[in-house]
Amino acid sequence: MDAVLRAAVVYSVLLLLFRISGKRTLAQTTTFDFVLLLIIGEATQQGLIGDDFSVTKALLLVTTLLGIDIGISLLQGRFPRLGLALEGAPLVILEEGEPIRERLKKARVEEGDILEAGRLLHGLERMSQMKFAILERDGAISIIPKDPRAPVGK
Amino acid sequence: VASEGEGARSPRSELQIEEHMDAQRVGWMVDRIGWITMLVVILTAVGGLFGNGLFGTRTITTRAGAMRVTYDRFGRYGADSKLSFQLSREALDRGEWRLSIGRAYLENMAIDDIVPEPDSVEAKSEALVYIFVADESSDLLITFDLTGNSVGSVHGSAQLDNSRESASFDQFFFP
Image (cartoon, rainbow over all chains, first blue to last red; front, side):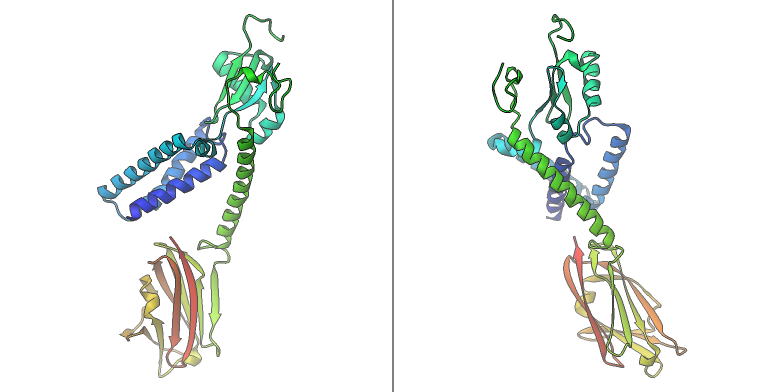
């Protein structure tokens, strides 16, 4: 029984912590973020397993963790507001070449992040070439360029 | 030109997107509350609320000062916890100290080590009596290395049988 309880507690606390850390925290995995993820894994491992190293317990934990995950996704399908609470909603952070600064600040996104996404995704040089930038639910930034046939800067 | 929501000049309606601005604002607020909570948790953890902190140990002295008990106010299941007794030489009786510790407490703990080791242990129905023979007239500091074996509140009691001075203390063990 304790395997199920441990998995449920760790799952919910991690879910809560990652939710309040914001989308941006681990969105673009830098080397250090990767190390951080590893350490978080190490730290939770002991709490999950305790001093019981049996295969049964490991399998129980995996089953419970995946089970909760499936359960939550099913619930999200049924109650859209739950999905909204757990995953958030996409947010427009730039329109017609102009960043919406208040939103950038709230969502902890910098203008440099938008420019970077523009370069990576579409080879755009300037914000004025972007029609929209959207902070997606997973923390990635997607860019919709202006119509390439239109003259730049218009 | 769209005239929806906050941006009247906004061409955003071309975008098939549901921003749920109310939920976004609630989310930002919850984030900030969460960060403050995290900070509070970190600071209280440093202070000792979850065991092993700066202010996590308590010391109580019995009435006449024969025994001084130092214990961890908060502990964690499966983690080390130290319990120490300073016995004064005035309480020495016929060359020995008889320190009894309530069984109810010891049932919640695993004793890893006792320093110095007692010369003998007597089992009574309510308590275990640890007997330390003194070879000189000085105070004695006894340290119990314990591992928390239960979760929740634990009530401990200890008594110096010779002087009939007793101390009781409460601990809390996190899961």
